[in-house]
Image (cartoon, rainbow, N blue to C red; front, side, top):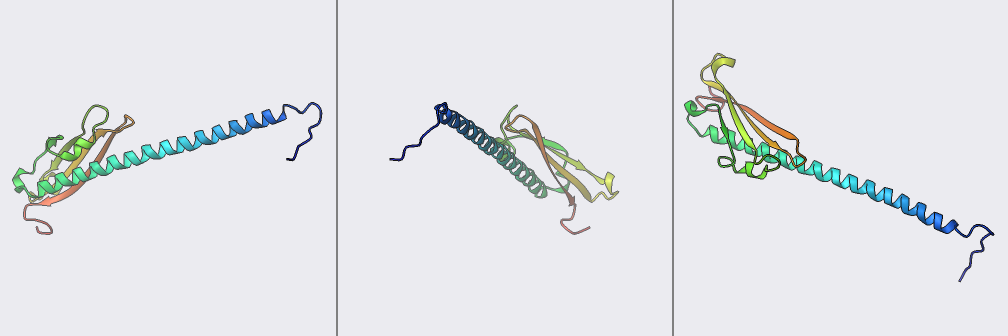
Length: 144
Protein backbone atom coordinates (compact mmCIF):
# COMPACT_ATOMS: atom_id res chain seq x y z
CA UNK A 1 0.00 0.00 0.00
CA UNK A 2 1.32 3.40 -0.94
CA UNK A 3 1.24 6.03 1.75
CA UNK A 4 1.27 9.70 0.91
CA UNK A 5 3.31 11.85 3.19
CA UNK A 6 1.75 15.16 4.13
CA UNK A 7 3.47 18.21 5.36
CA UNK A 8 2.67 19.42 8.82
CA UNK A 9 -0.52 21.55 8.87
CA UNK A 10 -2.10 19.91 5.77
CA UNK A 11 -4.19 17.29 7.59
CA UNK A 12 -7.58 18.82 6.58
CA UNK A 13 -6.80 19.31 2.91
CA UNK A 14 -8.53 16.07 1.79
CA UNK A 15 -11.80 17.09 3.50
CA UNK A 16 -11.86 20.46 1.72
CA UNK A 17 -11.18 18.74 -1.59
CA UNK A 18 -14.08 16.35 -0.98
CA UNK A 19 -16.45 19.23 -0.13
CA UNK A 20 -15.50 21.16 -3.26
CA UNK A 21 -15.89 18.05 -5.43
CA UNK A 22 -19.31 17.41 -3.88
CA UNK A 23 -20.38 20.99 -4.56
CA UNK A 24 -19.28 20.80 -8.20
CA UNK A 25 -21.09 17.47 -8.59
CA UNK A 26 -24.28 18.91 -7.05
CA UNK A 27 -24.20 21.90 -9.42
CA UNK A 28 -23.72 19.58 -12.39
CA UNK A 29 -26.59 17.31 -11.34
CA UNK A 30 -28.85 20.33 -10.83
CA UNK A 31 -28.02 21.57 -14.34
CA UNK A 32 -28.76 18.16 -15.85
CA UNK A 33 -32.04 17.93 -13.93
CA UNK A 34 -33.09 21.38 -15.09
CA UNK A 35 -32.31 20.51 -18.71
CA UNK A 36 -34.34 17.28 -18.48
CA UNK A 37 -37.29 19.15 -16.96
CA UNK A 38 -37.16 21.82 -19.70
CA UNK A 39 -37.14 19.09 -22.37
CA UNK A 40 -40.11 17.39 -20.71
CA UNK A 41 -42.11 20.65 -20.77
CA UNK A 42 -41.16 21.29 -24.41
CA UNK A 43 -42.07 17.75 -25.44
CA UNK A 44 -45.43 18.00 -23.69
CA UNK A 45 -46.26 21.36 -25.32
CA UNK A 46 -45.42 19.88 -28.74
CA UNK A 47 -47.68 16.91 -27.99
CA UNK A 48 -50.51 19.28 -27.05
CA UNK A 49 -50.02 21.36 -30.21
CA UNK A 50 -50.09 18.21 -32.34
CA UNK A 51 -53.32 17.02 -30.72
CA UNK A 52 -54.87 20.47 -31.22
CA UNK A 53 -53.81 20.61 -34.89
CA UNK A 54 -55.19 17.12 -35.56
CA UNK A 55 -58.45 18.02 -33.81
CA UNK A 56 -58.82 21.21 -35.86
CA UNK A 57 -58.04 19.35 -39.09
CA UNK A 58 -60.56 16.67 -38.14
CA UNK A 59 -63.25 19.32 -37.70
CA UNK A 60 -62.45 20.75 -41.13
CA UNK A 61 -62.79 17.30 -42.67
CA UNK A 62 -66.16 16.83 -40.94
CA UNK A 63 -67.30 20.16 -42.39
CA UNK A 64 -66.23 19.06 -45.89
CA UNK A 65 -68.74 16.21 -45.64
CA UNK A 66 -71.66 18.54 -44.89
CA UNK A 67 -73.84 20.41 -47.39
CA UNK A 68 -72.40 23.84 -48.25
CA UNK A 69 -75.31 25.68 -46.60
CA UNK A 70 -74.66 23.90 -43.27
CA UNK A 71 -71.09 25.21 -42.96
CA UNK A 72 -71.64 27.94 -40.38
CA UNK A 73 -69.86 29.62 -37.46
CA UNK A 74 -70.13 27.58 -34.24
CA UNK A 75 -68.20 26.24 -31.24
CA UNK A 76 -67.39 22.65 -30.38
CA UNK A 77 -66.44 20.87 -27.18
CA UNK A 78 -65.04 17.52 -26.05
CA UNK A 79 -68.35 15.77 -26.80
CA UNK A 80 -68.04 16.82 -30.45
CA UNK A 81 -64.28 16.35 -30.88
CA UNK A 82 -62.65 13.51 -28.92
CA UNK A 83 -59.17 15.07 -29.28
CA UNK A 84 -60.16 17.85 -26.88
CA UNK A 85 -60.37 15.30 -24.07
CA UNK A 86 -56.56 15.06 -24.12
CA UNK A 87 -56.16 18.82 -23.64
CA UNK A 88 -57.51 18.78 -20.09
CA UNK A 89 -55.15 20.91 -18.01
CA UNK A 90 -55.99 24.05 -16.06
CA UNK A 91 -59.60 25.13 -16.49
CA UNK A 92 -60.80 21.86 -18.00
CA UNK A 93 -60.86 20.36 -21.49
CA UNK A 94 -60.06 22.51 -24.46
CA UNK A 95 -62.66 24.01 -26.74
CA UNK A 96 -62.86 24.89 -30.38
CA UNK A 97 -64.36 27.62 -32.52
CA UNK A 98 -65.29 27.44 -36.17
CA UNK A 99 -65.43 30.81 -37.91
CA UNK A 100 -66.88 30.96 -41.42
CA UNK A 101 -66.44 34.01 -43.64
CA UNK A 102 -68.91 33.92 -46.49
CA UNK A 103 -68.89 35.94 -49.68
CA UNK A 104 -67.66 39.04 -47.84
CA UNK A 105 -63.98 38.38 -48.43
CA UNK A 106 -64.12 37.47 -52.16
CA UNK A 107 -67.50 38.61 -53.42
CA UNK A 108 -68.19 35.03 -54.55
CA UNK A 109 -71.05 33.31 -52.72
CA UNK A 110 -69.74 29.88 -53.77
CA UNK A 111 -66.58 30.18 -51.62
CA UNK A 112 -66.28 30.21 -47.83
CA UNK A 113 -63.14 30.72 -45.75
CA UNK A 114 -63.26 28.40 -42.73
CA UNK A 115 -61.00 28.88 -39.70
CA UNK A 116 -60.93 26.34 -36.88
CA UNK A 117 -59.24 27.44 -33.64
CA UNK A 118 -58.61 25.12 -30.69
CA UNK A 119 -57.96 26.79 -27.32
CA UNK A 120 -56.69 25.10 -24.14
CA UNK A 121 -54.60 25.64 -21.01
CA UNK A 122 -51.22 23.91 -21.27
CA UNK A 123 -49.72 21.75 -18.53
CA UNK A 124 -47.73 24.74 -17.22
CA UNK A 125 -50.87 26.89 -17.02
CA UNK A 126 -50.49 29.24 -19.97
CA UNK A 127 -53.34 29.48 -22.48
CA UNK A 128 -52.50 28.19 -25.96
CA UNK A 129 -54.24 28.24 -29.34
CA UNK A 130 -53.83 26.37 -32.60
CA UNK A 131 -55.62 27.55 -35.73
CA UNK A 132 -56.13 25.86 -39.10
CA UNK A 133 -57.79 27.58 -42.04
CA UNK A 134 -58.99 26.51 -45.48
CA UNK A 135 -61.28 27.51 -48.32
CA UNK A 136 -64.39 25.53 -49.21
CA UNK A 137 -66.42 25.84 -52.38
CA UNK A 138 -69.99 24.98 -53.14
CA UNK A 139 -69.08 22.65 -55.99
CA UNK A 140 -66.07 20.91 -54.45
CA UNK A 141 -62.30 21.13 -54.57
CA UNK A 142 -60.73 23.05 -57.49
CA UNK A 143 -64.10 23.80 -59.06
CA UNK A 144 -65.69 27.26 -59.40
